[in-house]
Structures are given as structure tokens and as C-alpha cells.
Length: 317
Image (tube, rainbow, N blue to C red):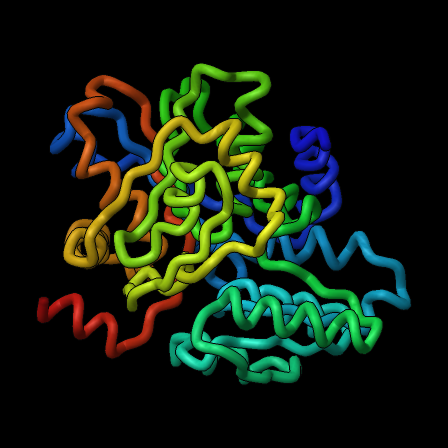
């Protein structure tokens, strides 16, 4: 599959429905770390995260009958994105959520007409169950990451980055199932192999990192993490594994306190609320910033959805 071509087609399909999010120069991080640091603010995207890009691209690529029978699974942001698209075009669907889904994301989902169901304690359990239900009912299952149309949509961020910044040396990208980093790297790397693609994961759920190390998708229990949007397992046979193996130059693993400090930093220095997954790129860059002195570095801020209780926990940490 030509991911670059898929991303270009996705951009044509979805560009009238999404925002081109800002690429903000961070004076604080640049001065602190001796690099030119830019924040790609997907927390300002419609529905509060990058996930709307993939959801739109996938759903708009379906035929009229397929759009009427959609099932998905999500830890929150993907489900919100699918719900938004279905409401916008007056279609119905079902979203399955893990039982421990963030209350902030569940509350947002309840404002849409999508049918909400809960299953499992880990997103991979939820995904397997939802996929089986879709097969039994002859519905269309929309994966949060394991789909070229989803990957293509997420990769449209890379097209925007090309317009917004001429020279890019490294991009730090949050990683869960790998749809976001697959889209960005799959678009950029074939033409610009010099750009370093850095995957960012929490120590409490580094499934893609451990899978790449092992040479196969591994099953590992995730511990609770404030980066709930990247937590949980990866579907066996996911196309994102091979893409990450091919294009991701390095993974950075961060601790919970490092993620919380990154959220706090954005509150303090930018007066901006971001979710745990959105803070992964900041926390990871701060951990290894000496390697990127005098470089142009982009940090993907992937989302904004965080509960008030989590914000209190961060502030009081």
C-alpha cells in the first residue's frame, strides 16, 4: 500500500470538514532546550483530537449502505470522532468502550446520538468484541488504527506540517495502536528519510515499543496511565506494526510523573489544557532534548480531553 498516496487522497476528501491546526513556536521550550520547538496543536482540532481526520476519511469512503451500519471501538477520542461524523451526516452507529474509559470522554460521547456500550477492561478486549459483533451482524467495523483509510486520514497532519514548516529535523508523536505515527511517517519518510520519527509511549503501556523489540505484536497487561488514549494492546496482525517497524527511528518511554509535569507545563507556560496522550511528545522531548540542540523539532499535541479530576491530580502532584 502506498501510504503517501492514501494520505494525499484523504486530504482531498476531508479538508473541507476539518481545521488546519496551528503550528505554534514554543519560545519557552526552545530557549530551555536550545532547539527550535514547534507544537502541532491537534488539541484545537474539531472534537478535540486528531482522530476526526481518520474517522472522516474512513466513513466518507464508504458507500451509502455501509454508512448505515457502523460499529466501532474506542478508548474515547476515536469514538467521539466517529460519533461526530455520524451525527453530521445523519447516520447511526454503535461504539464499544472499555469499562475504564475516561469520564470526560464518556460525557462528551453522551451528547451525540451514537449508541454507547461498554465491554472489557482493556481496549484490545473491547476491539475484539466489537469486531466480532460487527461480523455477526454484517456491520462495518471501523478500527481506531488498523485500517489504511484511518491511517491516511491521520497522515494529513503531515501535509499541513509541510506547508507550515520548511525544514523539519524530528517529529515526536504519541503512539497507542500506531495509526497516527503510521500516517505521518508513511507520508513523510519515503520522500524525506532524513526526518527523525520519534514514537512516544507511557511506561505503563508501551505495547508498540515492546512489540517492535520482540519482532512481533506482544500481549502485555497495561497499568493505569494518565495517557489513557494510548493505553492498551494492539490487534494481532495490525498493519501499523510493520509501518512502525519500517519508519519509526526511535521510541521514548516516559514515566507517569513526566507526563503529568508536561501537562502542568502546558498549563503554566501556555495556559492550555491537554490530555495525557497529548503530553507524551513534550515529556519525551524533554527527556532526550540534548540530542536535538539547534534542530527544528515538532511535537504533536494529539488531544485535549482530560477530566477535571485528572487536572486536579496533575496540579496537586
